[in-house]
Length: 333
Ligand SMILES: [Mn+2]
Image (cartoon, rainbow, N blue to C red; front, side, top):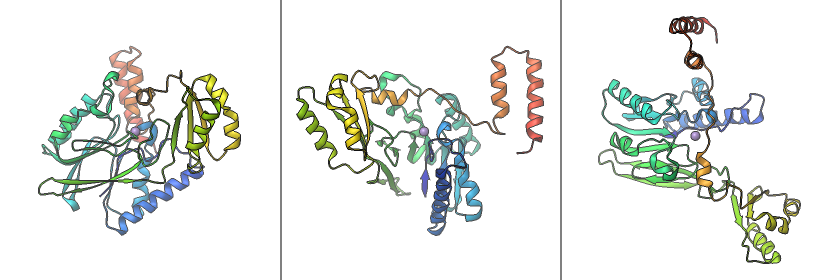
């Protein structure tokens, strides 16, 4: 089975963009390879502001290709008959809090008449992934481990971590500074009798490099320039380099000169008093903007949610709900 645990794309893609064509072409090639090698494909919806439901392209493209594809865009138990596996799928932000998501998990397990599943495929953060100082809400690793016979795969975090039987696979490529760890994917082999498993991390050696250079303030100007030159000399083109130092030092080493002399790299300069430095880990968690895509399945809930904030009489609300539902049912796509 080949698992894509959410965030296949990182933004909304317009149909007239070249990258849009490339993504659809990639999806087709991926599905054809799965079909050819008789591999089950499992695709989970990730963060709404990254995937924007574009992952549904897999389903549309697969209508002609016909590989064994499972697409999960809600909290659900997915039964894979060909492999005799029960999978719990948990997309990102399926409900406003991890507690409500867990309630839904218990509900879908009861409906499926199950107390455990073989694997969980999830998107979001577990408790052990969040720095304790941040006090952010997250999935309980204990609860999910208790209902999982084999392994849990969770997407969202760019950096890979393994905690007990939970595999945070991380991203395939590097996306920003402060995340210099290896990027790639995992191969997992599970003995279905004993539950014993073997994990192999396959590093993507083509992942673009993001290198931070902290300038040592005890060095002379010439030594600093030498420090930068030594670090960048073996880097592949199109690497991202960030110099971190006080504003004065950054001026001394000549920011625009580096850009001019080495246009093969992407340069950025970060003064040490910039809050984003040194707190890279915390910064990564402070994304509070929420994006949603309005669609037939959620438009009533979204409009009523807005109206509820406006202190409208319950009878009027009920009438609105009824009219909206009727309208959505009758309107054409
Ligand atoms: Mn995500």
